Image (cartoon, rainbow, N blue to C red; front, top):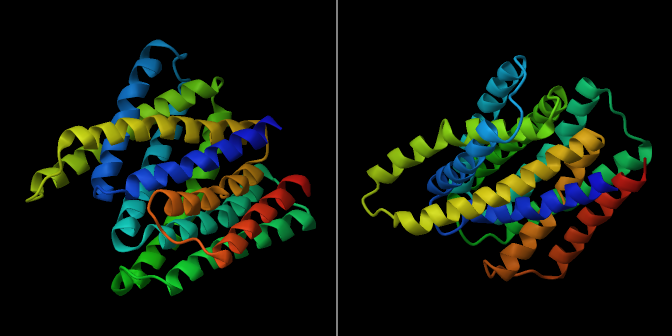
Length: 286
């Protein structure tokens, strides 16, 4: 039950995180500010609070850094090319399917026929939502195809990092050691420098203060979201946690409606209901 609560909590916060990155600032700058925020907040915990990582963890941290860096490059690029309500559902829909396959190959997890039905219902809802948004898209139509290709590839990397990080947190004696060191290494080693170079090249630079504030708010959201899903994968099946997290698409649509003033009609509500029903079937069909 705790794993279920953690996965849903991570879903809500992940939708907020996506909206923060895609918000009024350039996605590359937003991501750099967020990474700087959570990396700098994690550093004191990594050095002074949690136990020191075991020797075998350094190679695992290196692999996680590479995977997450590629994922973040792809995500920022996809957000640059496409609308949030199109890109986000495709990324989140592709991720759980491959995460379930990865969980089977690495952790020998299996799903019942009922749970596979739930995954099918959830994916129909997610990709249906993306298709609906795509049909009625009013902006960024000329870059729609590359945005969708990038979104699918990004979704594959979501599955890759979900499975790999689940392996990493289980390999550490203390899960909070993994989280603290992961956030510090992942946050400070790449994207802030990339974002700074991009910011310096802009002819009309956004004010640094609001951007950094957004970064630290996003950093707190990232701590809670990623930490919750990683703890959920340690407590329960990786595949189930990955699927449940993708209910974030529902919350992303709600954010698009309430915050970004996007229209939510009966068709979208029906598709969001499919996502929720699919998640429930997966959770209780085992």
